[in-house]
Length: 139
Length: 156
Image 1: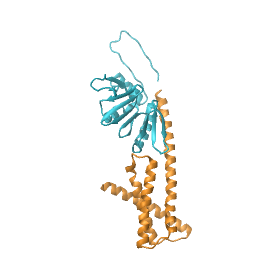
Image 2: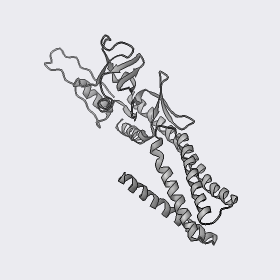
Image 3: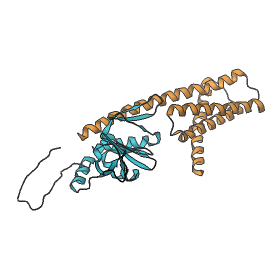
């Protein structure tokens, strides 16, 4: 368990560093600025995303498609909870704000899922060709 | 591979010389055959009573895959299904050089018998065999499966 927590924290540090550096570059290019709340929300989102992706071992016996949908739903629920807490304790979030947040989270998710889908098919094709090659070597 | 056979009625001890460039699985298989260490699995037809069923020696080459169900091990061949009195871990170790690789907790498949490797629309990858059976390649075994294929190609 301790090892798992350590592994999770290392992954979270890497993800957060990458996202915050990317965010800083985008801010420099666009000439925009961020605030403390945004930084905290970004950290919470990174924590949720890393945690959800970390659950993939639990879905080993299920299909990758099921895993992706389940992970998306878990992440959506956790993000919903986070936005609800922000709107109660920090500042109210408009329906447009909810929509924008979900959109900015869903689009990269679909993009990465599509990439994973492509990888599964191309890797399998390569492995199939490799098997044929090995079978021919044996003849 | 070139094969030379010499018949000599006068030799005292029969011998086999193997000239090879590197120790690859096919060479190891020849050595095992000469040393009479070629792995064979003995099994009984799965549909017969274990006490009465006739024990059959199965050649590893004839086996499509091994399946571990309810603490019993079964070998699937063209001629049928046979109950094997061995463990999956032992078979994995014994058949490593013969193209058998673990693809899930309960399956060991023979890569020489795979007809096609194909993903389903739900992204699960299946190995299909001549007899129409399909075995799922578990995601957590995918890396070792890939490494095994690479190693077999290098050694082949």
